[in-house]
Image (tube, rainbow, N blue to C red; front, side, top):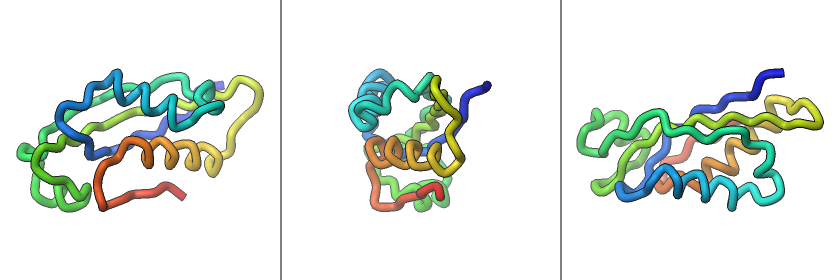
Length: 106
């Protein structure tokens, strides 16, 4: 069975490296980290290069960048419901996103 993909649009400090994001995902999920098959950075855009509507939606400030991260969730022992996958997505989002504007999955 294929993995469950969730794409996250995040506001993070500009110096944040992709490897650091992956480390923070594993730390945030603890024992559930084995559910994650992949954390991939699809794109990075500095705050100043984004349209003002995107900056406002993300709650970004200068010195941040928008990172589009693809999370692939693939449990080996059972199938996850969309609700369970969204709870994992939300835990990752809470660990990585650095802004007052938030977008939670239900």
